[in-house]
Image 1: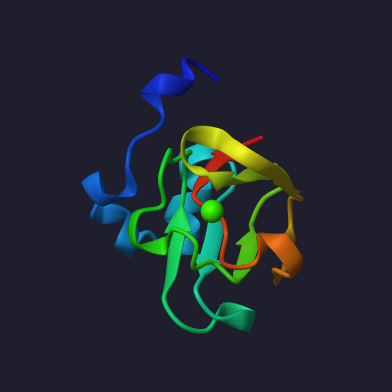
Image 2: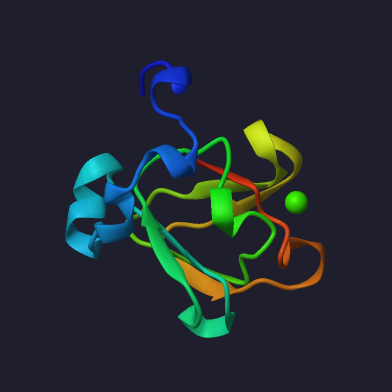
Length: 110
Ligand SMILES: [Ca+2]
């Protein structure tokens, strides 16, 4: 992994990420993070291949996640990797509950 600052940017500045399919996303960093605004992958869904300091339109709206590949991801309740940090394990998925639900604002590969 190189400089974190080179790998992060606001989600709004990347439109291609909207079209990232599972195979391409896995190629980017060894594993992708998928998030959606509804439970069980419903609602709006997006695939991410690297860290983002802000989730843009997904801020405080994420209710479900899926991690592909063996590497985990960190999700934070604040922008710029601040607030409460959650570890999303590799090859896992699930609905978010409690304080995590509708609260993520930045994500980073672990
Ligand atoms: Ca939040």
